[in-house]
Image (tube, rainbow, N blue to C red; front, side, top):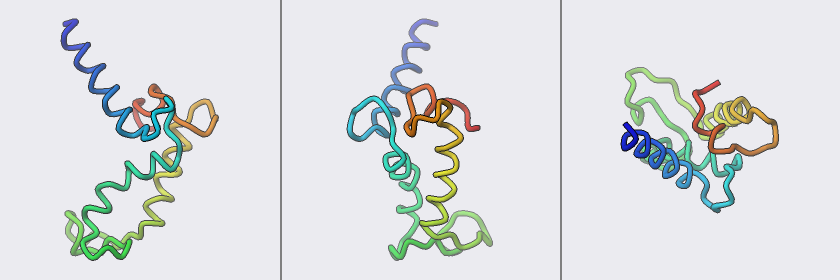
Amino acid sequence: MALILGSVAAQADDYFSKVDRDGDGRVSLPEFLERMSFAFRQMDVNRNDVLEPHEQHIPDAPTITLAQHHERFTAQFTRQDADGNGSLSPAELLAPPR
């Protein structure tokens, strides 16, 4: 059991360090948006900052711009920032979505 818990903790630390690009122990909004936009950028084949229906994996998906995507994830960031300090701690980042 201790091995499993250690592995889970290591994975959580690894994920946090990938999002915390500057290694300061907290995740800023730009770092969060960068990580949360990875899939968007991969799917945006023509690199126009717009996910059109044919670029998405969901039939009949609505068009979404990168700005709209960032708006949604900025709201998520704000909800996750439980202490309101403008950055996410490991506990806040890894907590279930609010």
